[in-house]
Image (cartoon, rainbow, N blue to C red; front, side):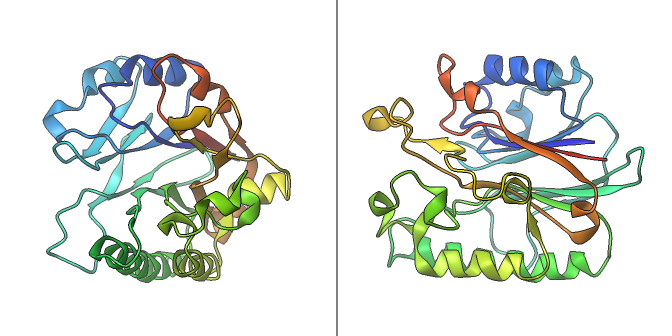
Amino acid sequence: MKIATWNVNSINARLDNALAWFSEAKPDVACLQELKCEDKAFPAQAFEDLGYHCLVHGQKTYNGVAILSRAMPEDVRRGLPGEDEDGQARYLEAVFPGKSGIVRVASIYLPNGNPLGTDKFTYKLRWMDRLHAHARALLKLEEPLVLAGDYNVIPSARDARNPEAWLGDALFSAEARAKFRTLLNLGLTDAIRQVHGDEPDLYTFWDYQAGAFKRNHGIRIDHLLLSPQAADRLKSARIDRDTRAQDHPSDHVPVMIELT
């Protein structure tokens, strides 16, 4: 089973790029983030024509997550538990059948949190605490679980070409990195690092400014975290860097794993 994550940075603005990638990569399940549209404005028909079911949890202008799948989704959850008044569309979860059994998959768009010292940063940390609590509950199910998405966290200095440039940024803050570690310490596996180890230049985001992509000033903030049951089935993991070189690209690129 091929499972991917991609912050598309406006699905309607990047539709041609997305359809081209789906046609070539052929994921079985794909988690999208930053749709920037309400459910009714999501271009579902275009993906249905490629053979995908579309689960969408959208929001006008901002945020928004989706899961596109070959198989019919089951046990759908929209929204992250723990704060009923939170109206931001950042979490979507469902179960998908496969040849080796079911896999539970979540599409995550974790808050950016900038600038530091503001309510936005407090919200980011609170959201991470809620994700930790929900992940802990899901792990008790002892089933294959993939928490995939844009985490807006640079886990360590090796995940940035120029770490010093991110000092004072919420993505590289000590608090956010610590909470990311506590998430991993629940028993989750970072799929890219599991497969590629300490290999350098494993980036998933390049800013549009200052020629960041040409200079390869990237960071790794898009992650697929696996439960032990999913990690046991991990066959491969890759970053589709070439999509960033296309015309009118997202500033993120797809990351995809394959489970047996």
